[in-house]
Image 1: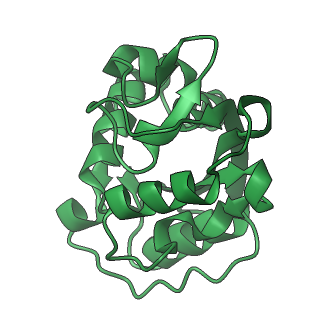
Image 2: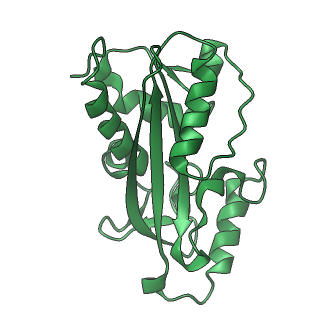
Length: 199
């Protein structure tokens, strides 16, 4: 299986959650595939399918791809599908996180609601396609906290856990995260397809 990403942190999460499939999971880099991908879809699902189709066109194996984002309600659900490119793709997340916190200055706790959303697409060698979506609800914190996550994790606070997603252990995060939930949904879908062995 190839997962259409070059993000090392994401690949670590994916491998832990998908370990029981018994399948070798390669990143695009590990597979030696570098397609030219223009993520210009209007939804998470469309962007995930764009990535998966681009890689699938260059190989003859199952390809998965995800698109995820942070939606901040006070900011009209920005940055949303543009989360990775918010303020520029090469802008450090510490700068992006500081900007979001600054934009929410003075906003009361109950109105700092946000969610992480993840859609995962699968493209099979025979051309079949499917998508799943999952989310985790939370709030935007007042400062970066935690060093276990990446991206927007240090500012995404989960009230029922009293932690940001960057303060969670890997196992805790994989249980509750948007990507963890979406990957488990995808595993359930993959079980329905012949030749895919998910425990």
